[in-house]
Image (cartoon, rainbow, N blue to C red; front, side, top):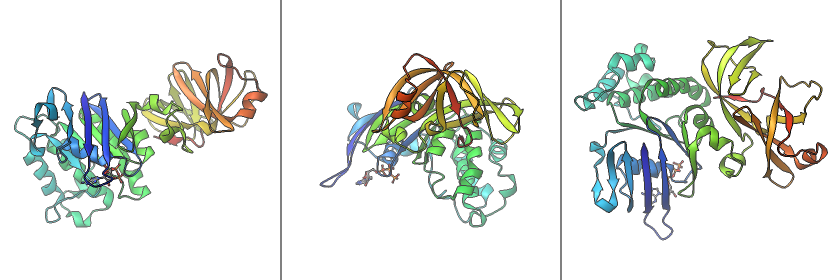
Length: 359
Ligand SMILES: Nc1ncnc2c1ncn2[C@@H]1O[C@H](COP(=O)(O)OP(=O)(O)OP(=O)(O)O)[C@@H](O)[C@H]1O
């Protein structure tokens, strides 16, 4: 378990007030998500020991890193936290291998963790070992920085917008490595981002921050199914993240199985059983009365209308239960009236998965 509770006012007449607390399972990826200036990096700095909060407690597993009430503040170098920043901060005069071996030398004696070969294979660094950082792309640099951090065998990996300096193609290229790391390393990670796509793909736990406070924290899927959190629900791409398994091809589309049903989507083919996450946007879901004629949508699933929740003046979210899974549909109040929808009844959920994004 990672426990964070901080109260800190930065100096200055209108000094920013951080007043944030959350707990998250460890190992696991905890994503701090919020707009610029919401306090994400300050929390990371406090966890790393780079910021000494006025009041607060930070603990990981059985180890208390900060406890101001007890006068405890472990210095950064005693925390076994490795940090990866936006720009990898590699040693320019050392080769990739030299940078990685530097990480290995920093590993505490007896600390468990992946070995050199394992990290090189996990992050695809083999062909780069002899190169100097100056000759690497931004994405390659970040993979090396990640490898170096891993080899120091940290108890906690802190990632401060590690993809923010990369363009979209590079991000797409490197995200699978972060996913592989999440799945392979039994390591707690605290990941700062303001990109929802990264949260969708990597988070086990999501912590939503606004103005230095935690708006909500909890499992990713549960938070994306809430309609009362403007940080998520007011977005154009508001919707639920479903954990799916690839289950073969059909009619030129990929079958994605999730608890309670399956969806067909134009998703890249992959080995059956592979786990993926799919964001099903609320505006890509509509409802029809059960037994309605087939439409152009590829997916029509029976669903229980669990609730009708406000979304602005003229629209609302329909909460749809499909087995144990929840989907949201964003529809007009007029549609609710026309169909005379009532919570508790069974409807047909029409899901246009074309717009759903891979995650
Ligand atoms: N050392 C400092 N002294 C004074 N104010 C600070 C200091 N560090 C951060 N702040 C202020 O605290 C607030 C939160 O900053 P922080 O960097 O934690 O936000 P963030 O969510 O990580 O933003 P970004 O996504 O832009 O990095 C900002 O208003 C910032 O100006």
